Amino acid sequence: MTLTSLEIRPVAGRIGAEIHGINLSETLSDATIRGIREALVQYKVIFFRNQQLDAAGQVAFARRFGEITTAHPTVPSLDGHPEVLDLDYDRTVARANHWHTDVTFVDQPPLGSILRAIVIPPVGGDTVWANSVSAYQDLPEPLRNLADQLWAVHSNAYDYAAPALDLSEEFRAYRRVFTSTVYETLHPVVRVHPESGERGLFIGGFVRRFQGLSQTESDDLLRLLQSYVTRLENTVRWQWQVGDVAFWDNRSTQHYAIADYGDQSRRMQRVTISGDLPTSIDGKYSQALKGDSSSYTPSEVVPV
Image 1: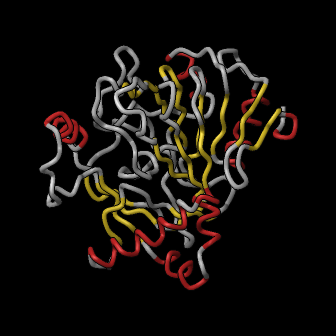
Image 2: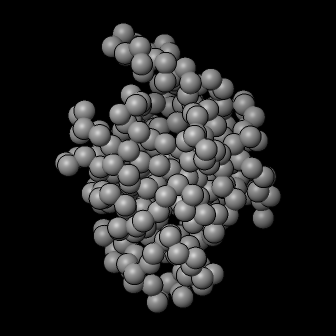
């Protein structure tokens, strides 16, 4: 099965497609896996409705695309499944309602993430993805030339100098877990995709500053670059149903989980596939500055 033989329906103009006629709980052929991977690279995020996966099946599907990581560098995994991050919003105050690319604070962020819907509120709880490649292409030439030269420090450390008087004790406790090991990594702001060769903005919510710029300059420039990523033209919004699976290319997207469902239940489980060292347009690789992520990424991916 090739990309052209898959039953694909694009769901937005620049990003996102739904793939029909595939049961992810079955043992899929190598040709089908190749077709899915090609669709992932082309559409950036792909969706599968009405799947009957459990945690073990989700892990097995993810393994067809490469080595998989542990659930998270600092947050505990699902009991009995060290590869699965259990996002049960009845039991945690943390909600990913900010634009980000997964785990960019380590030197080898995931190639991609696979998210499975277990409990969905009757209304609300959608997720939005953005195409960071088309965002880069939208930049005016002078701004694109500037971005080509920039490197950014990504970290999981919060800005504790910022006012935090309104934070609950539960959220403070989550912050302590999330930052129990502090990571910092220097990544190129413009990343070359290792499969498509496309250039995309590699920024998001874990960026703390740009190398060589002041904090004020970094904050202002980050807001400007992010505004191109999150333009509505570059996004797709998915209204979840129980059993849905979303698979996104973490190398060319950002995403935002909309926290508009109050105290209604929402539970998702995520598995991530090991990635490579991001590469700049002049062939330089990302560099870890703080923290050892070797226990998160099972084996080093050698740059090619």
